[in-house]
Length: 263
Image 1 (cartoon, rainbow, N blue to C red):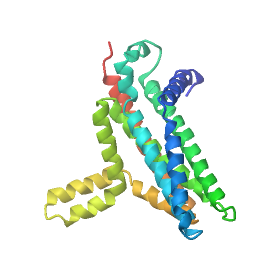
Image 2 (image 1 turned 180 degrees about the horizontal axis):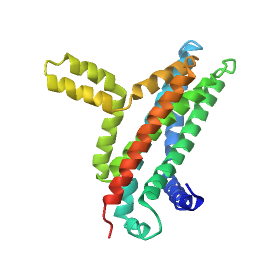
Image 3 (image 1 turned 90 degrees about the vertical axis):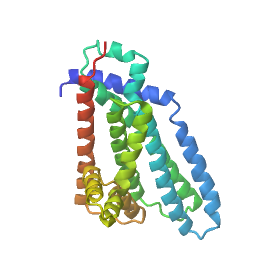
Image 4 (image 1 turned 45 degrees about the horizontal axis):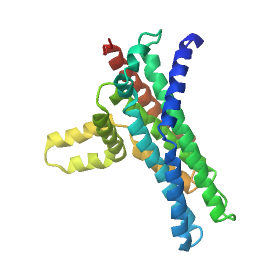
C-alpha cells in the first residue's frame, strides 16, 4: 500500500476519532471508575485475596461490556450518520476509494476503543494495587485486557458491516445477536442436538460453524486472570482467527458500500 493511499484513510480515521470523543464516549470511563470503586468498597469485607480476584474478574467483565456497548452503538451509526448529515455526498466526490472510507471509519473507532480500554485497564490495575499494596499485580492482566480489545475489534467490524446497509436500530439488533451467539454458540449447538427436529439441529450447527468462538477468548481471559499463561500457539491462532473475520467483514462492508449509489 502506497503512502498516497494512506493519507485519505488516515484523515477519515482521525476525523472519526474526534467525532467519537466529542460524542462523550469517554464518559464511559467515569461510569467504569464509579462501578469499580463501589465494588472495591463493597468487597472490602471479604477476605483479602479473594476480594481482589472477584474485583479483577468484575473489572474485566465490565471493560468487555462497556467497550462492547460503545462499539455497537457508535459503530452501527458510522455510515448512516454520514448519510443522514449528507456529508457522504461530499466525501464521495473526493479522490477517495470506498475501501479507504470504510477502513478509515473502522480504524478511527478502533483507536477510540483502544484509549478507553487502556484507561479502564490501567484504572483496574491501580485499584487492585491500592486496595492491597502487598498483593503483587498480575502482569498477565495486561494480556487479558488485550484479549478484550481483540474481541471489541471484532464487534466493531460487525457493527461497521451492518451499518453499511441497515438502519442504526436494526444494526444494533443484528450486532448484539452476533455478539451473543459468538459467546454461546457451543451451548446453542448442544441445545440444537437435544431437539428432535433435524432442521433445528442443522440450523444451530450452521450458527456454530458460522460464528466466531468468542467463548474461547473469555476462557483464556479467565486463565490469564488466575496467572495461567496459555500456549503461544493458541494465542497466535486466536488472534489470526479473529483478524480473519475482521478482514472478511470489512471486505463485505466495502463491497456493499461500492454498490450503493450516492447522488
